[in-house]
Amino acid sequence: MNHRVVITGIGMCSPVGGDARESWQNLLDGRSGIGPITLFDTRTMAVRIGGEAKGLDPARLAGDFPGALHEPDRKVLFGLTAAGEAIRDAALDADALRTAWVFVGVSLESFPLEQAGMAADMDDLIESLAAKQNVRLQTPLDRLAQIMGAQLGFNGGQITNCSACAAGTQVVGEAFRRLRAGHGEVAVSGAADSVLNPLGLGGFSLLGILSTENDRPQHACRPFDATRQGTVLGEGAAFLVMETLPHARHRGARIYAEVLGYGTSLDAYRATDPEPAGKGAVRSMRRALADAGLQPDDVDAVNAHGTGTPKNDIAETCALKEALGARAHGIPVTANKSMTGHLIAASGALEAAASVMSLHTGWMPPTIHLDHPDPQCDLDYVTAGRRVFDGNVVLSNSFGFGGQNATLIFGKYHA
Image (cartoon, rainbow, N blue to C red; front, side, top):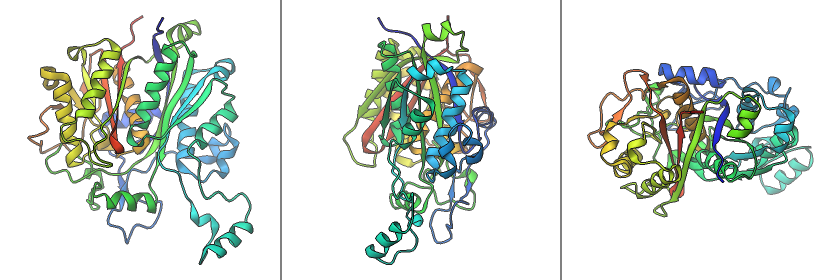
């Protein structure tokens, strides 16, 4: 017997807010979190803008996670911030935490070489390391899950997913499948990422997918606009507390929304380019609809991957038309990255949280600065401010490097 799975807690740490409430309000208000990068010197770089996350306070975070004061990896700190908020929001007690699963999405490992000092060659580097204590040149991918499990006492199991820009959506989907099948009653699922460092920014710049509009950063990420030049890197985290419906009801939990379906696919096309017609994305959406037992006519809104790159936006538009048929032109579409930038692994988790909030509050955030519609991107994009939303079903897409595709379908909770 399949269990219904519901969302009972939300946490966010993003370029538009330090917590879920602030992030959601600023998304609704259409406020961009993109600006000049302050974390390091970008004067010699072609790209000097990004979406730096707000509200990071390691000292305050150390109350729940003592190791946060000495944690050098920003994505780990973002993840702890958002996960802690989601757990408090859901009011989970110690017994529920002990049995909970942890599903975490991340992308790149971090290499803070500056901790080793200025080493002229390998011998100097080894000598420098030997003279220091507790120097970590590499952050393991499962570092965030390790800290969460050790500090909060999770015994259900820990899974870390590294699937580029689809990771945040995939971990929520995999947690949903696990709970629906009866393998546990509670999961804390989400993703965290930060590639706002010289290596990350330089690497993405070489791919030619980043906007170089440094003089007007808040306008730089314009999904589906004819004048778009590329995406903007952001950072942050989002986590959801997911429960089987019987467990949530038994403890009297507030329910935001329900998870209805999940689908994923692999393009196997190119390492960085989407398949032009969005064939992999079509398979992902169709699998999610089938998983939910829904038809295209049942979809009331789409939270798009919407990166602001010329190729991705066209491919996603084509995919939505193919997957949803004639219904595609009557469905409102929004793109949160117009305000947050691209949070890489964390983007799908944040967009999942935003989709849940649309169902819970009855509002859809806008896609800002879509002033010159691309003729090839001709769907009903939400512009000119937030839009009233009285629908029951939201589809949320994430498409990552390597052809990773993932789709979640959320529904308004009906008892």
